[in-house]
Image (cartoon, rainbow, N blue to C red; front, side, top):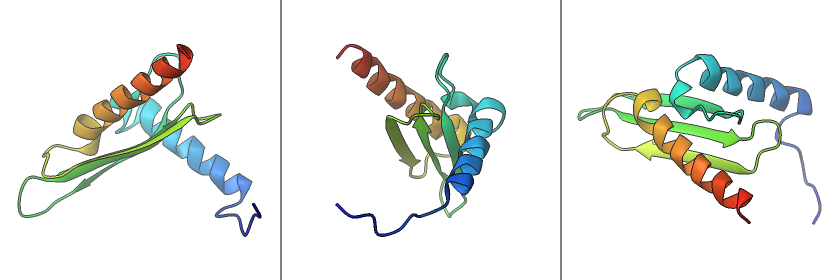
Length: 102
């Protein structure tokens, strides 16, 4: 394989990771926290004619990612932080638990 280009610089990627870990540690993504694992993520909510759509995207562990997730709840109501982030946490935990047993 040949590297064609780099999406963002290492510095930008590090800044983005830092912001995303802050979202989970201190912000709207708190429901994605996992004890002993630094999770990076971002929540989102979109208003529409029905109940709001919401989502959470993230990866873990933040310093050496082994899993990336995107959870989208169509017409789920609520926010990405209260609806999608807990689903993402459970998926990440299940994956990481499975990796430890391998």
